[in-house]
Image (cartoon, rainbow, N blue to C red; front, side, top):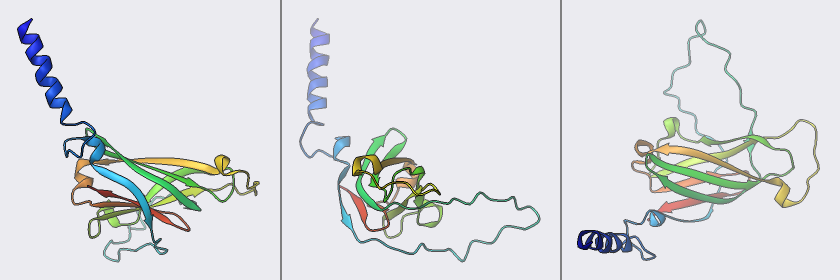
Length: 169
C-alpha cells in the first residue's frame, strides 16, 4: 500500500511538470500558433540534380495541382517518430481533391531553418459553383520524421494569396 501510494505521488509530481505552464517537457508547447507570412510565388529548381536517363525513364505522373486560394490554419502535432503537419485552406471553388503539401526545397531540407511547403489541390475540369466557405474548406496532413525535423525552426505553408507559418519554441 505504501509503495503504490509513493509511486502515485511521484508520478503526479512528474506529470505536473507537463502542466499548463511553459515547460519544455510539455509536447503541447513545442510549436506555437500559426501566423501570417508573405507568400513566395516561384518554386526553386535545383540545377545540380541530373536529368534521368531517357532509356530507363518511365512516364512520370504529372501532378495537376495548383496552390490553394488561401491557407487559414497550420498546426504541428508531435508524434513518437517526429511530427504531423496539418494545414487547412479555402479553395476558390468547390470540388477540390488530391490534396498535397508539396515541399518547396530539394529533399525536404530546411533553408535557413525554414521548412517550406506549398498547399496544392487539383480542381475539377468542369466549373463548379463557388459555394459557401465551409464547403470549400480543405485539410491536408503530412508526416515528418525526427531526421527531417533536425534544424527546423519554422514550418511555412504557402497558398496562392498567403502563407502561414509555425515557429518552434
